[in-house]
Amino acid sequence: MHNSHTGMLHYSAPPIVGGVEGVIQAHARAFTAAGYPVTVLAGRGDQSALPAGAGLLTVPQIDSQHPQIMALSARLMAGHLPTDFEQAVGDLAAALAPLLAPLDALLVHNVFSKQFNLPLTAALHRLLDQGVIRRCVAWCHDLAWTSPRSRAEMHPGYPWNLLRTRRPDVTYVVVSEERQADLAGLFGCPPDEIAVVYNGVDPAELLALSPEGQALIERLDLWQADLILLMPVRVTQAKNIEFALEVMAALKAHIDRPRLVLTGPPDPHDQASMAYFHSLQARRQSLGVEAEMRFVFESGPDPDQPYRIGAHVVGDLFRVADVMFMPSHREGFAMPVLEAGLAGIPVGATAVPAAQESAAPDAILFDLDDGPEQVAGRILRWAESDPVHR
Image (cartoon, rainbow, N blue to C red; front, side):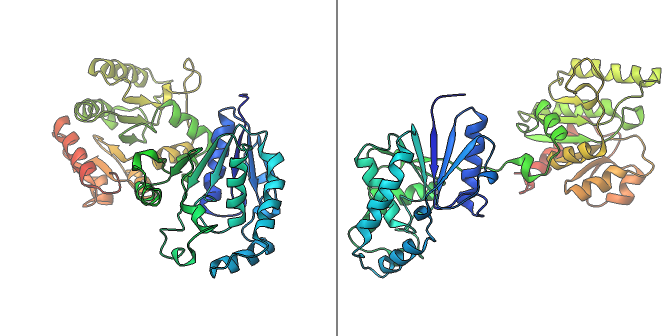
C-alpha cells in the first residue's frame, strides 16, 4: 500500500448514474488496484457502490441538487449574486477543510468548469488560496463558458469568471482535443499546457467476460492484438490447422500483432491425434509464429497441465475475436459459422459445401488450393475496409 492518499470530488458519486460518476468509479478502481488509498467526496452516494478499499465522505451541500444550492443557483442563473452567497461559500470551505487537509492530492471533476454549484467552486478556490489543498487536478469533462446550453447562464464578473480562471497551482485535464482547444481559448494559454486524458472502456466488463475467460485472454495477450483469428475446433487433421499456421506467418509479415487461437484439444487417448498436435507445434516453431498462434490446450494457468475450456469461455473468445477462421478440408455442418454470426464477427472459411450452404455469399470463402499469402491478403483487405474493425 502506498502512502499517497488521493481524494476525488464531484457533486455526486456512484450509485448515482452519470458519465462523470462512471469515470470516478473507474478512477477509484484503478487507484485502489495500484495500492493507492482513495477517498471520494460527494454530496450523495453509497460506499457499497465504490470499489473495495475506496472511502466515501459526504457533505450534503456539495450536491448540486441540495435545496440551498438550487435556490442560490436559480438566482445566479438569472445574473444576480445572492446576498447569502459568501455565507454558503464559507460554510462549504469550513466543512471541507478538515476533510481535504489530510489528502496528498485532490481530483476535482467538473466543479472548476461547470456552474452547477458555484459556492462549491468558490470554496475550493478559497481552500487553494489558504494552502489547504496541496495538489489539485481539475478534471474538466464539460465547460460552462463554451457550452451552447450553459453559456446563457454565464455572466460577467464573480463568481462566474471562476469557471474561466486559470490557476497556476492547478493541473488541468480535459477529455478530448476539442475540450483542450476550448479551455485553452478560455484561459488564453497554449493548448499543450492542458493535458488530454481520454475516457476508456473496460472490455471485460462491457463484454461480460467470465473470470476464467478474462484470465485466459490476458494469458494469450489478446487485448494488445491487432487482428485475432479464432478457430473454435478440436485438433484434428480435417481442420487443416497446418494451413492456418502458414496464413498466420503470412499475416505476421504485414501486421505487427496478429493472433490465432485454437480452442479445442487433441484427443489424449489417440496416438495419431497427439502426434498431429506435436507436428503442429514443430511446424509453428519452424514458421516463427509461436507467439502468434496459441493452442488453448497448452495455455492454462499451469503450463505443465493440459487445459480445456467450457462453452462459456469459447463464447468469451468469440466476443474478443475479429474473424472466425475455418480452413477445413471438410465439414458436416459448420457450427462455428452460426456461432460467428451470433457473435457478430465475420467468417473466413474454405468453400466446403457446409460453409457455402450456411454462409455464402457473406463469408470470406477461399479454395483449398489457394495459397496462404492469397488468403492472408483477403483477410487483410477485409480488415482495412471494415469500419467496425478499424
